[in-house]
Length: 310
View (cartoon, rainbow, N blue to C red):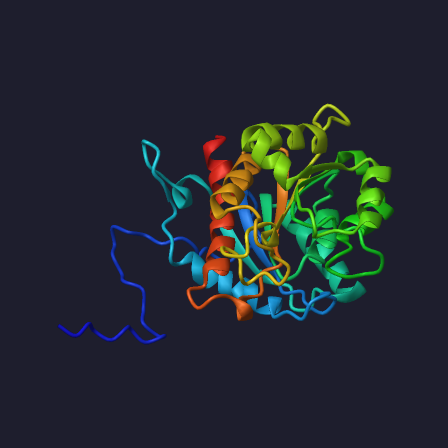
């Protein structure tokens, strides 16, 4: 028997009233009390590698529709039923000084109305303005790279945050990889007092132990309520087989399940109030869209962490 032709690219996802889909969240209004809100930041102009990352926020939103918003439990939990989730649209031009000012203002306004702001990148340069807009006093990066480069690019947000006053002893960088950083920048991290947990350390110690240390350091108390943490999810921390749409992903990185577990563990902490998902080039993804789909699952893992912690 001849197999049927594959469906055309415009084929619609099957509609089943008993199988709701994630995404499609309402646009945020002027009201508050939201548990989470997503914001698109299509930055790409200062990327060190040519990228189509500006196409990624829309691609992530589309990919979310392929997934269910259900945690199996037991009992099963439907994220849309236990969390108030909204979409704030995109900041049209997030690059450059004016764009970064717009990002800071947008994130700051959203934080007044939502417990968690999830920024959909775009390249890693957005971490700088998002963390500042969220008034984060601690930073956890899931990244193969230190992002301490000189200049202004997707390779410099951590250095820029430190220079603007973020305490380096409250920065934890998880998944830093051999052969993906220079000795000069590795020494810079050491001299600054940044906590670096390498890719090998993650696998040797295990995810719960690593994330517990990262949260304790990044969220170290500065007052009665502690400090807000920003989570930078750079998908190029993953193995290139699962993240081919990340220009800087390399063979041997984290597996998809490892990234997802780290993200959920981080989001379960009440001090994590902002996150970004970055370095995915939707225009360079594999034909099956695996990198964008992983980025979409990171959105759901952030929400799952908040739901499970309740």
